[in-house]
Length: 279
Ligand code: C2E
Ligand code: CA
Ligand code: CA
Ligand code: CA
Image (cartoon, rainbow, N blue to C red):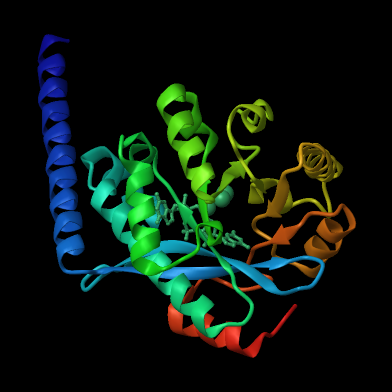
């Protein structure tokens, strides 16, 4: 048994070392990617369900590695968060997306909002609201055209400092939305405590609204409650005509998903905005 124990131990140290080496290698790759500008933003339109018009666009980051190809954010965002690289990366996202949105709004008679995903680390920066303010000035984007997406898990820790930052952003005129609603602690109490404008119902609920009465009931109840609290509702993961019809019926305000459009490179979205091709 002792012998076996020893070999197990060796096995594990090797394993941990390999994992650590891999982590370090990935971290270096990420650092270099940032320096080499291998990140790209894709943009997914969000439509107003009543008019069918594109009213907002969510910026979604992609990593285009010359060897590995297109890498999904679910793979590298957690790593960027662990290593602190999320701060320069997130700043790059904010600047790039606001620059693009400002261009769209200058050549487009119908202005759109730009929705940007934030990481907890960004919100925890003492000067975060000042950073946002500087970017808005630099890009000449109107504050109410910037929508910052937060998740519930970002709000449970550091309540006081986050609340202060969010209140400042709100006073500046920025909009705040609660992303992935329904997957976390899902307390509507967050709406009371934080200056949230919009709830984004997670796609796991939207997916089955036409076949699962529970998901339909939850989506309807969340929408009714959010509306009575004077908040807007966006449905994510809208993939079929049936989804659109149901969401319309229960008065969800806006919709985002593959049925409307996949996330697109900026030039393709420019085309969509020009065509004003409504749903
Ligand atoms: P998210 O914020 O919930 O973004 C929506 C995700 O759902 C995107 O995945 C989008 O491509 C995908 N999606 C959109 N419509 C549909 C649909 O109809 N069906 C299905 N099945 N999926 C749909 P993506 O682009 O891979 O992003 C994954 C996550 O990575 C995002 O989830 C967000 O949490 C994070 N992320 C993306 N960009 C950034 C960023 O710039 N900063 C930070 N901190 N996180 C980001
Ligand atoms: Ca989001
Ligand atoms: Ca989401
Ligand atoms: Ca989601």
